Image (cartoon, rainbow, N blue to C red; front, side):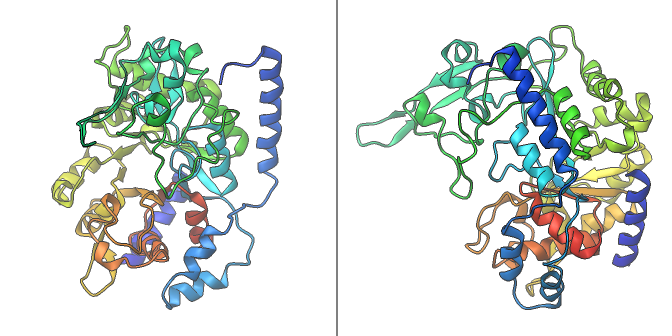
Amino acid sequence: MRRSILVAVVAATASLLAGPAAADRDHGRDDDHAHRARDLNTRNVELGPRPYFLVDDMADSDLKDTLLACGKREFHPSDFSIGHRGAALQFPEHTRESYMAAARMGAGIIECDVTFTQDLELVCRHAQNDLHTTTNILAIPELAAKCTQPFVPATFNADGTLLTPARAECRTSDITLAEFKQLRGKMDASNPRATTVAEYMGGTANFRTDLYSGPTSGTLMTHAESIALFQSLGVKMTPELKIPSVTMPFNGMSQEAYAQKMIDEYHAAGVSARKVFAQSFNKDDVLYWIAHEPAFGAQAVYLDDANTVAELPDAAELASYKADGINIWAPPIFALLASDGAGNIVPSQAALDAAAAGLDIITWTLERSGILADGNNGFYYQSYDDAVTREGDTMRVLDVLGREIGVLGVFSDWPATTTYYANCMGL
């Protein structure tokens, strides 16, 4: 039965599928980016050492032998490999550099999370209110002053116990597009014990790096710029319409107009709907696209916001999604996997129910949990953590998702891992 799910899904996939520079310097830089982007299309995928490390770390098994045997092959981009915010494990998310890294690692689809500025321009950010943790806005006084909540330092009692954590909130809607373009991306992090802006902007997780967060990198992008880049890279696109932090309508723009504006930018760029997997956690957005932009709605992705297994939809609710015209359900990875109690990772009941409802599946997010061998791996592993004992188990996770459940694709913070697996398994 599981193999038949995969065959059906593969068939479905085939059918669907620091301050501004002078103007002349910007033009030169854009030309340089364009040349590099075109060059990517003529090169083999560059995976680096991580996928090989993961395979080497696997316990002995037929799967390990299969993955080892294909290690010297030529690798190619795969739609199974989806760049989550680009390549956010090591590059500042939703930056040109992160997107380029994802493409180099063979991501066949790359994500721009879409939100808007004060002047209603669409930009790539994971949330409308994350500029204080993902950019250098707090280090630019004239822009920091415009934040919904400017920086407030942490407070401590006499013995050094933290009383109130440091805080700030800076939204894209606090600033104009011109001001947004002055910012530089950094790794998504903050230090709750900070007493200065510089301290607050630290806090990067120890399994990540600040190596690519320098003052000449971290190039932020508009949604339209991401479309142009992705076209030049030859990848498909999966924009997520982010739920606004502001009350809608905002400056005259309704939620429906916001959903339409995102699609209009693909029309303006001449992008086929077959190359776009529009996403939202808001079911009304997905239903809007189905009703008003049916070509885009046919492969629109309904993201599931469940935080625990108990919050997942049951079989009847999943069937109702299909009845509403939704074709792709996208839950977090834990929703699709379970442990059999004997060390094996198996498809969950929700995965089986989704297949029975006729839904295709995309899932998120691999390579986002740090070291696995130390246990307590958190959100994405909550339903099967007892079956995960080493870093190489990442490949076992992918194998159940890819061959037993037959997901269309897997979002990953490091697409080299998913690209390696997909090429080895012919996905």
